[in-house]
Image (tube, rainbow, N blue to C red; front, top):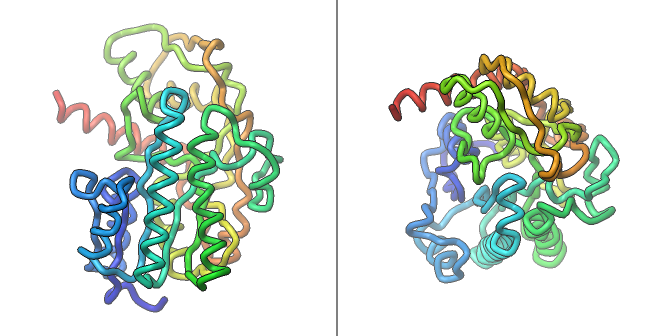
Length: 315
């Protein structure tokens, strides 16, 4: 793909956390024809709205970021909803994109699709070698069905779709609602509130032993657009960084950066989630030249400062 300037792009989830960065980067590349289907007008779990979307905005490419997603707690409370809504949204968007003869469909999956005990670092070839971690399996499997659909449609119809597996994202504009947020924004919010209110203890879920990798949201957006520009193959691709950090070390790091000097209490009754997560990112670098750039501690500092500014505006 030589230029974005004449392209017409639909970005589902374009008003969300990751989507807002993807849209900004599209505009920075000269793309002026971007359509974001807001849920109030296009509930994409309903077939009639998917059909309407493609009628209202004939396009060259779909970047499908929209998802019903949350942390461990949200996944435990909504396994049926997360499974169904993500499954039907992806399936219908890709099917009607095919029928509309759209040039390319970029599907964004999740590393929750990997088996619970995947050898570390996670390689794309291991994606089917076991069942995902139980608390997020319905969500992970629903998203993984887009890979099956993508490969089947390429084989039968020659439809150009690609499937990307981003690592846990973090950065400014993340979701800081404790009921639905992921680990980094949840910890940032807990520690900053503890500092603000003079609390000397913060309670954190689990044992702290599991490990996670993280990808700064701007890096993720760049990786998605590089794949959109350069990658046209059937194999799934990890998008991530080389980082692997324990939840205990992550918690202590965020506490320090937030200025918290009290005690961290581990609620070991709560689930840990998957034991380890770190991605092999060599395929993304080889196929379309993607490598994460943001230093992890610097990315955390930027996220904390952004959240502090938002909180000030709310007061």
